[in-house]
Amino acid sequence: MNKPKQTGMTLIELIVTVSIVAILAAVAVPSLSEMISNNRLTALNNQIVSTLNYMRGEAAKRAYDVTMCVRNASGTGCSTNAADGFENGWIVFTNCNPTTNSTPDTTTNVCDYNGDNIAEAPEEILLDTTMTLAGVTISNNLSTPQRINYRPNGIASNAGTLTLQFNGESRYAITIAPLTGRLSSCKVGTSGC
Figure 1 (spheres, rainbow, N blue to C red):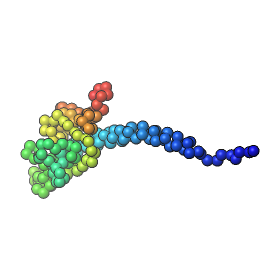
Figure 2: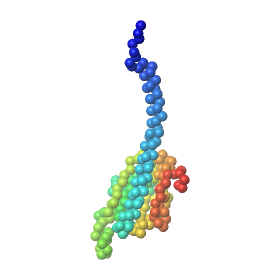
Figure 3: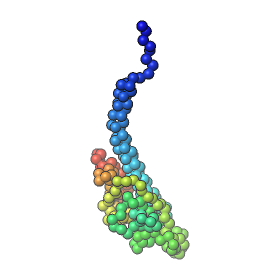
Figure 4: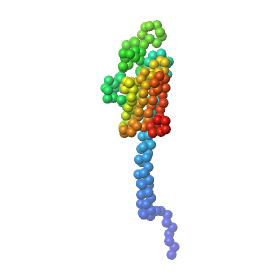
C-alpha cells in the first residue's frame, strides 16, 4: 500500500520549532535593549559635544560670552535648584554681562553688537534642549556645576569633566581643557579615558 506524501508539519515539529524561536528571542531581546541604550547614550554624548563646540564658535563670532546652563522645569531660563543637573536639559544663550548674569535676559537691551556703546538687543537664546532619556545622569566637577561659559577668545571660564552615567554606571566623559577650552570625549573604560 502506498503511503500518501506528507505535505505539512506534524504537531511535534511545530512545537519544537516554536520553542527554538522562543529561546532565541529570549536571548536576543536583552542584548537588543542594551544596544538601544548604548546608542542613545552615544547620541547624547555627541549632542553635548556638538553643543559645546557650537558655543565656542558662537562666542568667537558674536564677540560675547556664550553660556550653557541647566534648564529650569518650565523652560524659561536657567535652573536655580542646586539639585538639578544637565540631564534636565540645557539652554544656550548669548551672555552679554557674564559677571552678573546667570540667566538669559530676553527682554532688556543689554547687548551692544555694533560697538557703538549703546545696547540695542536683548540676550538671545541660541538653543533650548530637553532630555527624555530615563536613567541618565550627568555629573560634573566644574567650578560652577550648573553653568558652562565660553569667552570670545575660545576659552571656557570653567574647565572640568562632564560624566554621562546610565543607571549609576559611568559611560562617557567629556573634558573641557583648562586654558584652551578644547574638548575631548571618550568612552569610560577604554584606553586613554
